[in-house]
Length: 173
Image (spheres, rainbow, N blue to C red):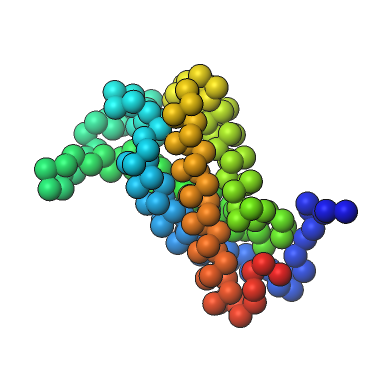
């Protein structure tokens, strides 16, 4: 029987290390996701990204949260929210892996798709930040789910590598 809730031995759990690794993995994976979205955008150019809508709803002026780099205007506010989200989810994922060894199924992609469906299929629409996931269209769905796979794969690769280096234990045991 395949035990989805198989737990890791308490003596091999490293919660504080998982939090530290989650911060590192969250930052790096956010940059991976951002780069992927530049190649395969999840929305039309005129659609405001949900992190910017969130900032506006909270009373911040996301359109003023910019810096200029080589004639590009970069919105640090929206990107900052996306990076913070990535860090929080990466920490949750890394800590979850300290308890449940199966959390990393398919190199974390099962977890990542679950997060994406929960965030973009429930939380984001309920907060009025974007439409419902099933109304997004096939191009947006492809971008979101393939980008999510690369994002969580990056988190898992960093988690495995750093955990093994710091603990001298293979994290896939």
